Image 1 (cartoon, helix red, strand yellow):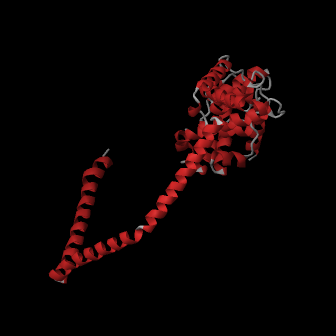
Image 2 (cartoon, rainbow over the protein chains, first blue to last red):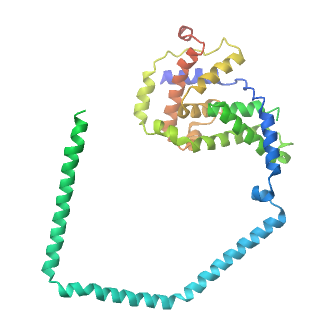
Image 3 (cartoon, rainbow over the protein chains, first blue to last red):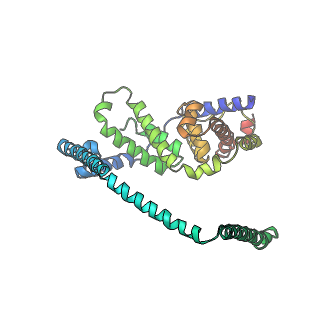
Length: 144
Length: 175
């Protein structure tokens, strides 16, 4: 701790009050060139703050109009939503009815057996993959 | 511009550790100063404004490229950094570079700073040159306070041998 404080003090003393490094001779010329380049840009390629007042006002007006249009279209869509929702519910009930067909035709025990068989096959495939990974991939790496 | 260009360039160069980047940032600072010329022309704090803008622009630039050094800095635990810092066992002298002229001292220090990694140089310069507190530096760099303290400590420890190889012999440091 004492060493740290001593180090801080010594380094601080060495680093404080150093004279500035002289800037490269090219800096002023670069700044002038950049200012000329920016001044030569057309107004629409500059920052918004540098646009002419008329252009800025027009831009704000267009933004307000677009926002109002979006809100208007949104409210119209909401009004038309009720028939669309009814159509969707009809389709949903039809899909549910179609889904019930296999349950009526296939005995439940068959379905349960198929699920169990699927789970067993998945577990076997997972075990086989893990075995292959350990045997074919990890062994050569261990042997290095 | 002539009155402040050395200060702006020095601030940028010490933070960046790279003259090319420092010149780019200095150019951007003076373009911003030109845009605010009406306000700055009569302001007694124009120098402070320029220094703050330089520091902010440089930190923004470096934070954009931060991922490069973050890998080597923040993915190590503070404990391992502490251990590494302790392993640098240079004797701490009473004074450093005291017998050199100001210009020589500046050249030696700037050369040594350029050789420090970003994650040590940046907080070190902010602490010793910009006189920011640890908490402020941690906040600006979005790094934990413990990490900042460790990096600054390691940076100081790393400066000793760098200064030694820059012309100050180890024997001189021990005396």
